Image (cartoon, rainbow, N blue to C red; front, side):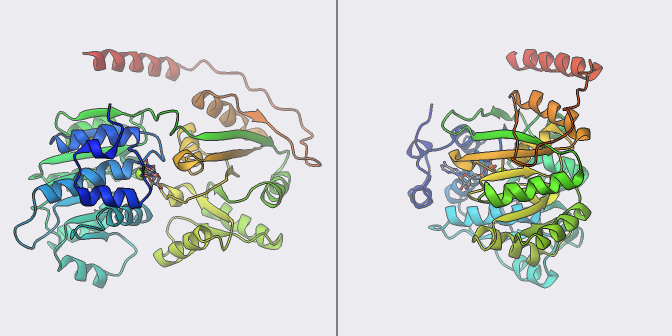
Length: 410
Ligand code: ADP
Ligand code: MG
């Protein structure tokens, strides 16, 4: 088992960058994916949020570009697709940091950016392009982006791309990149939502990697919940938590409308916050994220779409002001805290109608998530009890799972 970056056959200039970024050893997924990709194999990888998937695909791509340097200027050779523009920018930032001692060019092509800016990029030699599927497809259809030179196609957060309805566009892009040599697909989970079926059409006998993070990497997240009698009670709980215990928090809401309401309430309570939501101009989003990242504000309000994949360092609390619509989304949300081995807290504020989701989450994460109380804000109502339904679904899932296991053993 690989324990150090030095064992990974990476160029000294990459090792130097890795060291200056403070990575002392590869994470589990990096130790698995880097050798497989450098072996020339397609890769189908899943690992939980915050376990270093970005470097797991960027490093082998950078190594490949150096092993086979381009002979003349030209279009991109590695294409990385991400579901959101923030994520594209983060992946590009990390790629630039890792490529700091090379002469490789890394660009992003996403929505929310002036067309002129892209015209400048497209006229240049690009080694790596990080893109969101929609805008890239526009350029391809206008014959302004040339996929024929793409040798590696990488899909980051494939599960979320499917969730967001990018499946058909990604399929098209894959066809456009049909001369590629390798395809790498990364996802937080491969379960549900058809990632596996989707990947079957894109990948060729991939190395299937499923990295359970080591204990050192596994996050230490304390999870608990507070019950609220009413919406007003919930707001009081949030204000109490934000002003007394939480240091740096991200608060999740289910819609922009809900976010706007809460923003007004927090303003009224003089709790400074920044906020991000889908369909927000790029510069304003960046601004909000920067204010939070720099510590100008310690509370960030977000919807799920907006927060997906963003790496915000040092979040002490993830607060579910609105419960997520699924246990899977819960896991993604709480993945915002306790990154790279730090401790974190995840708090859910639960009204009576949220209790079934809270129970489902507890079963899903296989943890006993305890109820806690805030002095003076104890709920007056009793905890509602919902009978656990025996669902056909569960049985089906169990059957599918055991089938999968058998298939894997072959
Ligand atoms: P994921 O995509 O799996 O959610 P990221 O690639 O965003 O995770 O990485 C999460 C954080 O961990 C980032 O801040 C990244 O810089 C850091 N990181 C990545 N690899 C390592 C490593 N080998 N050692 C320490 N930190 C790392
Ligand atoms: Mg990621």
